[in-house]
Length: 438
Image (tube, rainbow, N blue to C red):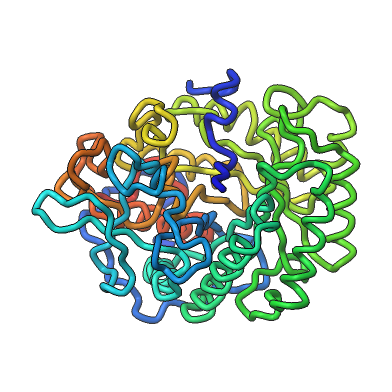
């Protein structure tokens, strides 16, 4: 049961990929520093009362392995055909597992260059997910929106897995003082059961699992946050009436509702459905977050996106009395997943990611969604990744962090997200060039 969500090329193959306080004055260039500041051993607990000045990353949590104790008991989102070899891999980037303990790792049929077995992790393992939140704390990152794929929830085995991953996220956030919220992904869910699937599952989360009782569950405007990704995209059969019914239901339940909406939500063209009724629906979300992964592929494209979409979107949302949360991403590659070009949108050593963060903060955005913490399938992962070919399995065509010619540490993108978060919070000046060097 493999559901590939909101991918760049899900729209790109349809012709919709557009590639194109230290006292320093805002925007002034600084000399990059080569050494990383000593991490605060006790960073402040993240304020769970607001989305303002936060960067929340998406947490897929969809990776599973045989023997991990989860009901599917199989490889999920790592390999095809339940055969853990390079030719069957569906991920382009390889996670850095060097800090994981033996009880967190599951063997594949591949080996590393030195002959050691190549092993992977499962999000069903509480210890590993809690470790991910430790990395967030060490890099002073705010937390995540944990993905919940609606199309899976009718399968008891996958419902159990999703509940376990959510529980692991909750424990990780509570252990390390981060925040979390649920984001529903509608991809693959039949429209005739869409409303009931969403409302019934939220009842399960709120009343049975009591997820919002966690002191680490994110709130905004005095209410718990729930995000819904996927309403109104072109090629889908959901309707404005269904979306309105869901939004109204969640608002009546006392929630702040965030919408992951099409890039062209404001103009109702290209990746958005054209029914005029969507205009009011999109503006009924409390927080509007247009999907932008793959809509540009370099700094010039990101700058054009800022001028033509981000800034007008922010102005429109503000006029409607809504918050606006743009999406930024480090790069893209899904060669193993779909046969697309390897390293299709290069990360450029972090320059591409930083340009987007600069554009968002420089435009006046008060919150940012980072795609994604752990998405190695599509090459947007921000967590610790294999830095060189020496850490990649033999026989594959995986992408190391040094692919663009710059030697980087495995946690480079967590460091950059830390810097971007500080800029968003006003702790660092707004600057267009990378603030640190590897």
